[in-house]
Amino acid sequence: MSQAKPLIGINADYRAAKKDAPAFSFLTAGYFDSVVAAGGIPVVIPPLADEDDLERVLHMLDGIILTGGADLDPRRDGFMLHPSIRTLDARRETFDRMLVQMAARKRIPVFGIGVGMQLLNLSQGGNLFLHIPEDLPKAVPHKDPIDPAHRHALEVVPGSIMERVYGEGEIRVNSMHHMAIDEVAPGFRVTARCPDGVVEAIESTQDAWFAFGTQFHPEADSASALDLRIFEEFLCGIRGEVVESVRLVA
Image 1 (tube, rainbow, N blue to C red):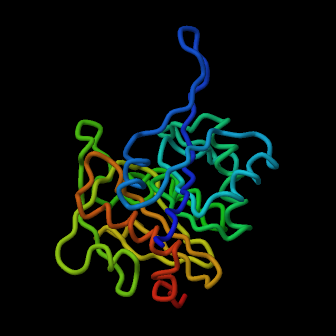
Image 2 (cartoon, rainbow, N blue to C red; image 1 turned 180 degrees about the vertical axis):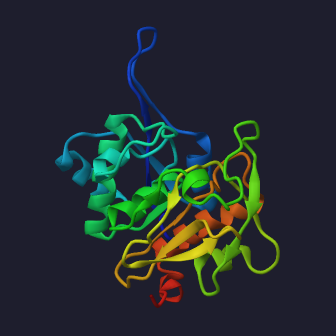
């Protein structure tokens, strides 16, 4: 008898009502298409407000993907709002923060993408650069407003999920962000960087929690066919097929 496909929760984005449009939740198809292609069943979660409701949903899930989107509001963590920041809708960010904290408490497997990785790091005690051009002036461009398919090189750490996905040789990934991880949260380590030093992937070093994130977007139209392997690794880890081999020493 074949093993049941894992249920993967995916947080939806949210747009508040405007004069000419009602409020609605939405999700880029690449997220759920990638989960399906990797052998999972996607479950889209709207921004719930009640913790008990979310508790019931999480009880049914085998893993969670924290999606990308606009920027986290640094004022929620005691920092000034940088002029370059375009914040997530407050309803979505409030829900996302609740979601990642509950997932961490329950040790539910998590894969964070883009701002999802930033939130994973932030929620566990790390922090962020608010604007790469100012905080890291020697960095290569990580966002090109004219070219949504902008790419840069990637350097992976041996013995990590990223190495298993990409192997050796020259690697290039899409790049569409202006914020980035500064200090990595306790219990995590960096597993890929851009050659300029900007963090591009992190991975849990905790035996009890299978969690990792990528700053780049393997679900996007600008991703390579190889990027789908990241979703396959996530599902393998949930099934316990690779969990032991991904435990890293801090």
